[in-house]
Length: 140
Image (cartoon, rainbow, N blue to C red; front, side):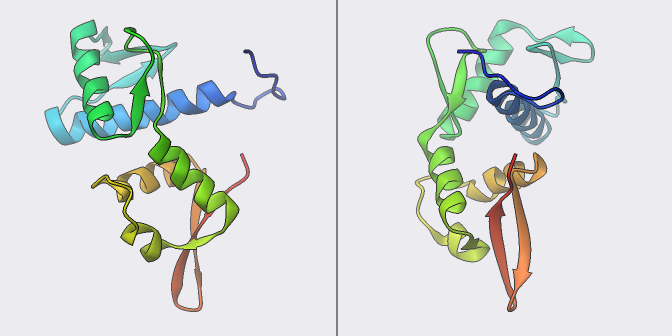
């Protein structure tokens, strides 16, 4: 299932890997003070590829937080969970008040982190309208 893109554009898989990298880096700093880097589908720490067990721990943590789901046993085969897609699709269909979005119950505690990550990868933006912060999906 290869996607054809214009030269210089990222495929959906590459975008998902980039978000995963951001997630891993964020979690690494927050939970174990390890900064991870992404290179050719390998996740490394200080130039050394992380052990499969360490990667499983990272992936497991993200799975526990409902950010991603695993496919099979490989730690590298992951996809975004329904909750991330639900947020993404909700905002695509209708730009929404940022605070209202945060107040919705998606059964996760770190919705703000997800939004921040999507903003970091430039999938979303926040703009101000009538004293309200509105969140909107950007065209990729």
